[in-house]
Image: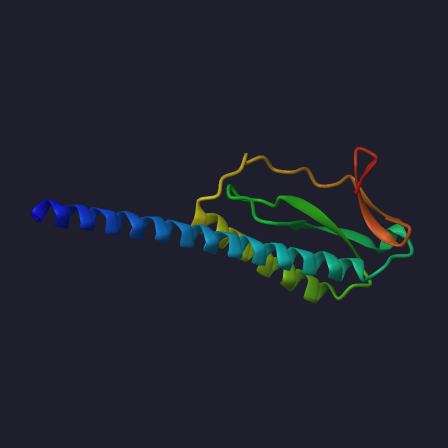
Length: 135
């Protein structure tokens, strides 16, 4: 009878740990999806504004790499509400930093080079690296 109880306790503990692990994975996926939604909102906000000349284009670092620094840069027109844009980006970067720490996310720790220039192409600000447009 004692062996049976030990077996039942072992099996119950195993299922408890498995379910907890599955729940954590689901939670991580939900948080990643939330970050992706925020990123889409930022990109949609930027894309809802246009430029008429290169002088109306700027860029801003975006994202929070686990080792520090941005993942990339975003081009935006000066016609946009920059206060709102910068708050959206700051909130995203903070949330991504928390996500990285919480889930032990790693990266290559490289620092992306800023663009050489930002140009207005067909009404959209476009980043250029070494004279080549980055879509």
